[in-house]
Length: 234
Ligand code: NDP
Image 1: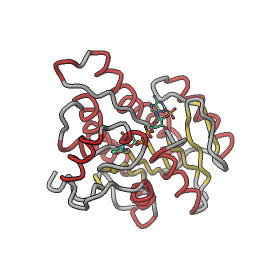
Image 2: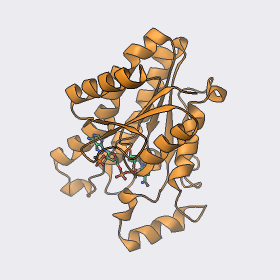
Image 3: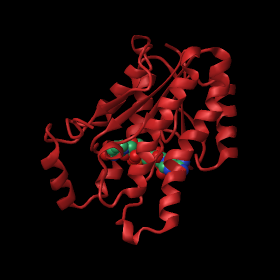
């Protein structure tokens, strides 16, 4: 333990729970935020993952405080839901830029030091809808599905250097993102989840810390669903 960990979008929601879980096991944890500041006890670096220069500056700041990033959690993400026929190109590319290209930007910046150290743990926060599809989420589901191909390619490129790249695919989790859904939509969703409830943010964080642990050193290119059974078979 005592590793240098960076969680993008770790100022709230799932990202914050992930940051707290690493902190609880004694790691040095930094989070990115876009102006909110950092929750107590965490190192906050201001960074919008759609901005390559901001990503570079954020890593430089983390490196100065905690040393090179050894564990990267690409969690930052947005939705901009609407049916395909109404979706503008800007709505599509904006979500891809934040969720997919953003994850690529932080990975590219992180792997420089990971290659040198011959060690790295990368986890992408995808979504069950990336595997199952979801009406009204063509942009979001495409971005989340693409994280699987990216992780698996990185696993193949960098596996021999003890760098693993895995994906956690949460189902529905109680956060601001799901709060935004209508009551009708929430009821519909819960009816399809075998567990009959939303996940807690801590349940997602537990899967993430496991994938970065020594015990998981031989797991790479895996997609770990934490979805109460919603996506079984996908
Ligand atoms: P929230 O909306 O609660 O938080 C999103 C986080 O991402 C915030 O910290 C936000 O920062 C950050 N973020 C968004 N865009 C950017 C950007 N361009 N640059 C940097 N940071 C950014 O979401 P959740 O905690 O619910 O979701 C976290 C991840 O989990 C996302 O990738 C989401 O897609 C995924 N997920 C969530 C599920 C759910 O049910 N909630 C289910 C499956 C997957 P800021 O505070 O500045 O806005």
